[in-house]
Image (cartoon, rainbow, N blue to C red; front, side, top):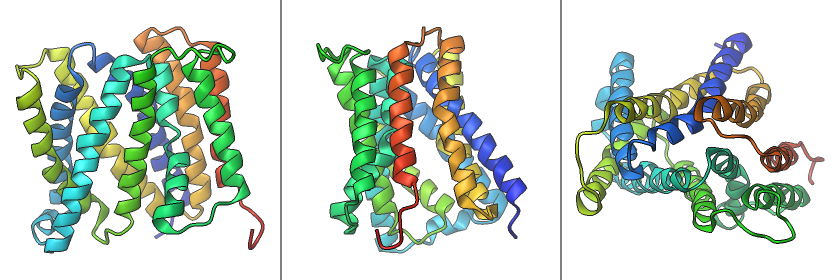
Length: 295
C-alpha cells in the first residue's frame, strides 16, 4: 500500500543517518586501520541483516539460492563490502572528511557514464553537462581552490575517493541482474565478501582487540551505513507514491554532513569545499532533470 507521508519519513530518516556516516568514518579511523574498521563494521552489518531477515521470516532464503545466484554474490561481495569499503575507508584515512565525502558523492555521475558501455545506454547532452559541472567541483575540492596551480592536497586520497565511485557504480550495474529480495541478496553478498576482508586482515595487518571507541564506531558504521540505511531506503521506495520527491531528499545529505563534520570531527570547512559541493550537486540535479520526450 502506497503512503507518501510514510515514504518521506523513511527517506528523511535515511538521509539524516547518511549525513552522519562521514563523521563516523573519520572518528572511527582515529582508532582503527581502514581494514579493521571494515572487518568489524561488516561483521556487525551482517549480523543486523540476518536479524532483520529472521524477523521477516526470510532468513532461510539466503541458503536456497541457485548456483548462479551464489556466483553473483561472490562477484558482488568482492565489490561490496570488500573492495568498495576498503578503498573508501583508505580515502577517508588520507583526506579530510570534507573532501572525501563530496568526492564519493559523484558516484551517480560515474554510474551514468559506465551505464553507456555496460548497459548500452545512450550518451545525452545532459550527461555531458552533469559530468562537466560535477568534475569541476571535484577539481575545486581536491585543489582546495588552487585552480591555477592545480596542486592536489593528497593525490592518492583523491584517486582512491574517485576509484570508490567506480567500484560502487559497478556494484549497482551488476546488481541490476539480481532478481532476489534485496536484503536477502545483500546478506548473501556480505557472507561471501567478509572472508576476503578477514583474509586480508590476517595477511596484511596485525589483528588485535580494538579500542572501545573504535569498536563503537564500527558498530555504528555497520548498523547504519551498511545495514539500516539500505533497509530504510528500500521501505521509502516501497511506500512512495512519487519516488522523485523522496529521491530529492538525498541532496540534503552532503550539506548536513558538512555541518556534522565541522562540529563532530572539528574540521574548519573551507569555502572551496562548499563551492565544489554546490557544483557536484548541480551536476547531479542536471543529470536527473527530465528531458524532452525522445531527447
